[in-house]
Length: 159
Length: 165
Image 1 (cartoon, rainbow over the protein chains, first blue to last red):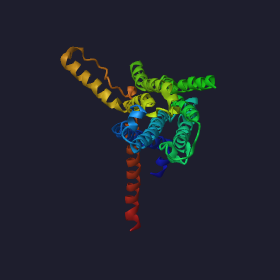
Image 2 (image 1 turned 180 degrees about the vertical axis):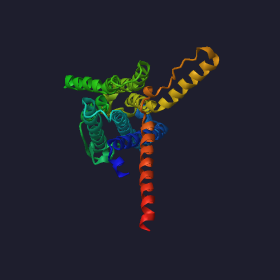
Image 3 (image 1 turned 90 degrees about the horizontal axis):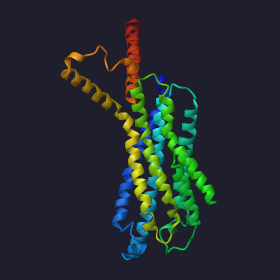
Image 4 (image 1 turned 90 degrees about the vertical axis):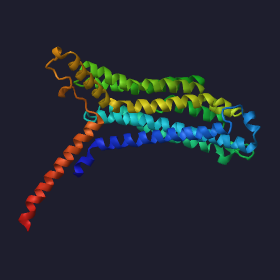
């Protein structure tokens, strides 16, 4: 009975289902946050959003950055779940180059990049509230850093 | 600097598409019919769509550094990330619909037999050798093994039980 739990298939299958559920939850979270964002006037020019008050503007920017977390984590877990599915299919094939590639690039590297990108998103300013509230005094990283890291994550697209 | 970022982008777009290509190398060695091979490759090749979306998204990602008009500039990113997430959900779960495809195939065979009763061939279209191990099948098989093992141990226990008492 217990010996079947040691089989490698269980790890991959668990990973697959966990990541697919995570992806679906991220998709739901993404939709919810974007609906709230659009409700506050998101995707308009920033001066049009500002007409409805400064609090409205800061809340809209906060929702903008929050939704990006769902995007990053959702895309990453989707790709991890696909590679876990592939690993599960070829679990009897031994350590071929495909298996090494899937584990190293598409699972471990991907999750590291996704986690670091989410952290960088919210820790790029000090104090963190400075990111969405321009009234607070504080320092931020050069916006180019965030853009470059975003391009890195996006290109890798975390797969 | 710009060249470096572009090189990275090119490399990772390649890495992106590679996940759609790896199934090809795996399935080509399986002992299944050519039709099934092509079906499997198409199903897993759907992932190319997501990499197209992420490529377009990458083009707009430089706007993340825009601090003057953030809400307007990130619109394109939102559109393409939404498309990518949706395609990921759909394409990632399409392979589990394989039993449905087989059901449709067998339904077609049944209908064809009813319509053309004379051209019945001896060949069973769902031969055992054509069977592909899906996750559901593997799970069912494991469960069967588990129940077999547990029933074995139970029967052993029942044979031991009376001897002890």
